[in-house]
Length: 377
Image (cartoon, rainbow, N blue to C red; front, side):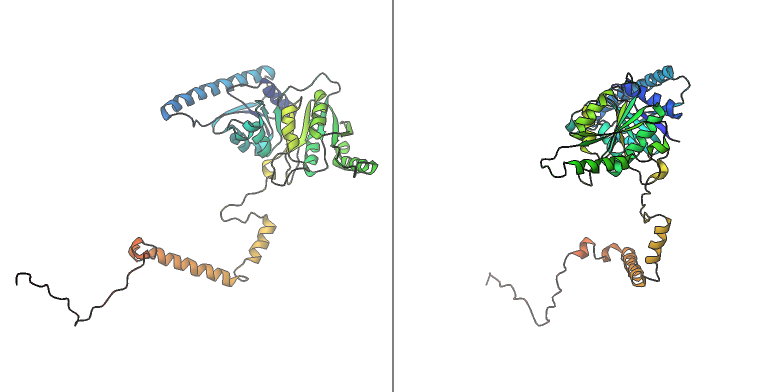
């Protein structure tokens, strides 16, 4: 089941985020799952921490009940579920994203340093690590524009293709038109800045949105190339949009980045909800399936390969092809078992035997010590 996951902040309930999540659950005909996480208490003595944690739990239960009442007033027949969990909010929500169609949270409008260092930061860590699209509601959507508009950022990367696929599904659900925006920064040099560069970007933009018209004939797709920085151009386009959809990472940055600079900028400056879409190795990117599409993690004795890859691995590492290696492992295992079976005082790593022993000295029988002289003589 693919739920719409809504993160509830017990200190400040984000009503726009909760309303957005409830409306999306109705559109997708799925369950709304509201989760409140109680963060650990570190900055108090144990006797003060118990009382503080009790007050936090009471506040969380109250916020969860208020959220459930609000959703019931908006959509009486909506299927809902509530959950109160101990743990850091970003970690708790991230652990539940594999089985979610999308996750919705509000924005606390934290600074960049607080987003990275604060334990209470949720939007940025969740957008960077979630296994499903993440919706951050900083400002409400613009519903006064007709027909409605959804903006998706395109740069020709694999991440942007996942964002385009999700944006097309969302536009179809909302009966909105889709605007695919390619922001083309002005380079310091004029190389590739002429008609040839424009033609290349038009081609890449067309390739990125190819197939949307066939899969969703009810969605009107508009392709736009704007000159300027991506954050500025997408922020300007968000002033009349229901949402801005972007990939988790674009062409810029290094391969280890979890979240691109464009996403960071939009989370601070966009005038509508921002949807960050991750790339999945297999399956769709529209939030219909997620848990089965995740890469399987290798256990302590697992290779981490799929069935064909595991068969090849076993064939290459079978005892018939690697007799010496397995024999060496067996010899080392036997030595280790013999070592552990010996008494402690006879092991080489025992403190009394590990230190260097002094060689024994043999005194000849003929050697005698001088007798003590009598001083009374």
